[in-house]
Length: 215
Ligand code: SF4
Ligand code: SF4
Image 1 (cartoon, rainbow, N blue to C red):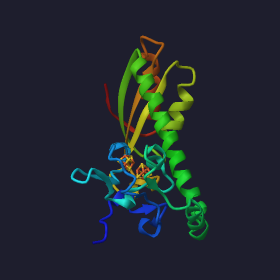
Image 2: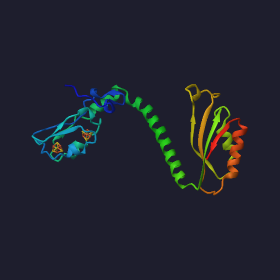
Image 3: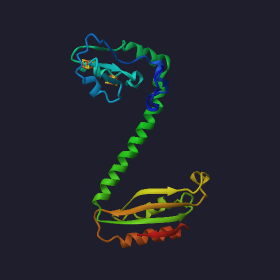
Image 4: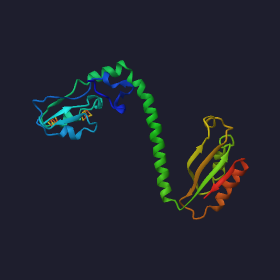
């Protein structure tokens, strides 16, 4: 019976994983039943036959293309893999490197966002004072955040954790659609940011938006 693939392992950079014959083969005559491969593989490629005291390959397409860790650590040299040139040939034929550029771009953006979020979280854990704002209106069209940015240049505060919610799909690209913005005004230095908050409140009003809440 064909191996039922786990969804997350079904493709390798867009290529059907079953078209890539990269997986371990165990020489049962050499296997000494140490269970090291069974315990070490993070992708559950192996099972262990207790009666025969041998490791068996159970889910071969779970194997990470290019990985050969189990073969490296097997004390009996019982595990083997195909020649790695087979992978390089598939990479050339399937133009994997072109696909990788898109994946790399996505990964880089995601990493940058995660890094920025971590920095904000660190900052939030050190802040002396914080105000949570909720504002409704034409957030994009009124350039609310640019105006706030320009006005608070002289204040020792920062605005972080910004979410703009659009009630509809159109609202996510139509500059005129109403949205709700949530953000935090924070300061790690100042004990009192009421003067700066006043500047922000006035900017919200002047921009034609409505301050829903400030806590
Ligand atoms: S690591 Fe090698 S010897 Fe140990 S169980 Fe796996 S195949 Fe057998
Ligand atoms: S090569 Fe890596 S992923 Fe594949 S079976 Fe061995 S340890 Fe698991």
